[in-house]
Length: 260
Picture 1: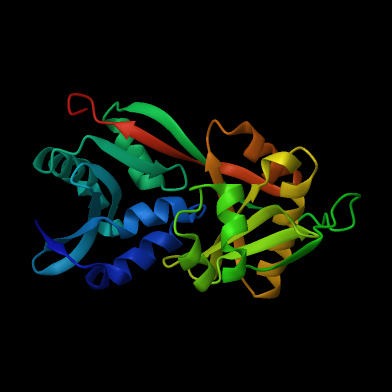
Picture 2: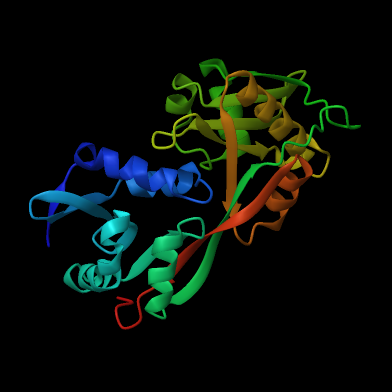
């Protein structure tokens, strides 16, 4: 078996096969790391049998083999880790193959994030579920958003142009911002999130924004997903109160002896 660097377009069929085999999807936080990774195709007798991806020369973000070739997975992963001097692995607990292989290596485990899916529970008639007036953000909102959110959203102007941001105002006061990031890898899904004005936290604003974004996604035929840092209990409670549930974790696993 041989491996070589390639573009993501060369392993698209393998990538979609991998995604279909997941027990649960991942959000755009992990997706951004994957898309920024260098991909490598695995070949046997000139036929593609798998691929892997490495972010910033040190973080493994993908490893997948066709089922008939998975008997070679332990040996191949060990080879990948050694040849590329990989120090860490990002693995979703929804990725049974890579999770099992990483555990075989007795890696040090750090809990990175929760991944959420919609429970399907209709909460729109609950008291306090009215999200108020949300609308697509406009460039005229740029100053308000930056004042309230700081650098949390990155390039706000670009996000507005891409249609990823929604604003929740009460009069002239920006209560919070809703975020919708459509997945580039998992068709028909989008990651949703919110940022609440610090002056209006613990008043149900974040919950209302998530409820509104879920309804917006469903109206567009999009499956809403979400995620938050594992130790952000406030975000976790908000998402769960809006009917999002988590059964999946993102783990950051350190390769023993190659911590850097």
